Length: 463
Image (cartoon, rainbow, N blue to C red; front, top):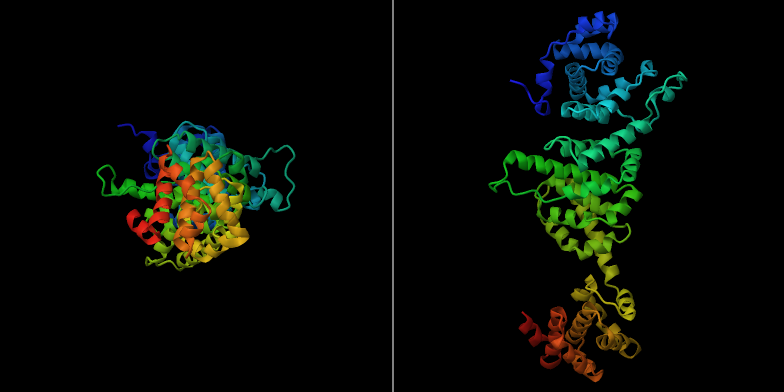
């Protein structure tokens, strides 16, 4: 029975017997390499660990040279599995690839080339290994160690690696090589790599930010017939790692510009509203905290109802102290935004411009209670402008909001009915009760009810 390469596992690959002696005979590996491989291959984990502790860079050199010089698929898969196993057992072994004795070895090139190979197993392993061994904080290790590189050597630079790796990851997000594992593998690697500023820059330049947004979706309920607990767990992990990527990008200004024009905020709000997974809630709340002071994110969060969502989240019992602290900080920041949005000057500016919208201030009871007396300024200037809007505007939204605001003034000002009547608003509002737009007629009716019947009775009828 032939194993589908897409479903190969590391354990299955490592059961193979590789003809190392034949490779030495044909001079594809050296005698020294054969001796090292004989000591290492098929040996117990503790024995291999001891060999790597004593002479790790030599083994890295052998593995990289095999990947560079031998193209037989079974052997390439085997060596990639050896490296993957070695790093999985101890991720700190990534530093072995940057030992100064390897300064003239092109350690990145084989993995970068293998990313684009046909078989998924090879692509996945190469990506995973590269994500662990790439060192974005420094230039190539030889230069880092102050050694002059051979001018004839054309070593793969860190820029080459990042460009190639990010290009492959974006390709997976657009058109995955593997129908099930392509996207999760790419997002998982990005969640590791985006910690580095250079990777963030490359990812933004590759227009990668928008590719992540579609994966921010509430995970289906595992009790539904179409989802198994395993697939739900995988979906949850993908959601978490996608949100982790967005959080990492929220530290990078050029990425924030992309996030501001995407559906990122509404999607994350929907997720955090329904998720019970603490790690998902934590990373989204941390992202919101980062974005809150940037650009128009604060007003957007208020419009999306985040203040109430945060209140609901604060009422839950979370075990993570960082999450509790982040929720408190986000709550305070949102309150400041609500105050800013609810200031009378802001409202006044909107009215004087003559184009009204359902910004939070209009339905904020606190705003009307605190500011209703301010409407008396300049001989009720703002009320007069609202009434003028009823006469002159062709925008249904502006008409609806103007009617609503007049009804709010009537409700909250002790003499509201009499003042609005004196300003001859009644006739103008009544004309709008037959408007073709339902939103306009609804709010015109509310205003008339409050004019005729009084605020409390009109509110009773509305209920």
